[in-house]
Image 1 (cartoon, helix red, strand yellow):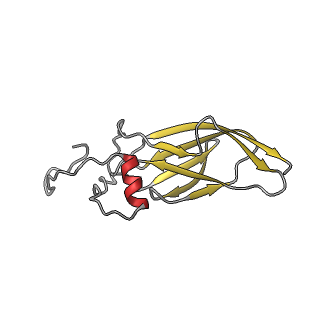
Image 2: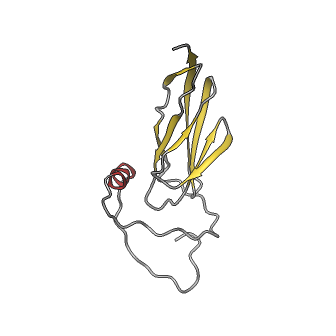
Image 3: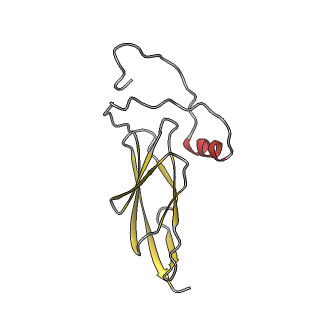
Length: 135
């Protein structure tokens, strides 16, 4: 209902599919009805359906080779009305991607803040610890 035009819109109901179920359906190539994109000119910020970062794990401790750093995967689950997510590492923009797309990054050593923001302005932050070791 936010930012709807005065005329020329259609009212249609869509099934609610939880973010983790959507991810499973995407991974297994199961078709489902996605909610169409929201009005791009709308500046409303939504509060429900905050992204859930599923990889890496919040509070996790990751050991990476000091000789050959192995990238970590960034993965999140979002509502089915989301068309794009934005990744931030230590408050610096890293990359944008469509939901379900594998994104990898090589983390710096020490505490790392990872943020995922969807195209509706909803955000989730997690912290991990990275230690470089000789393997």
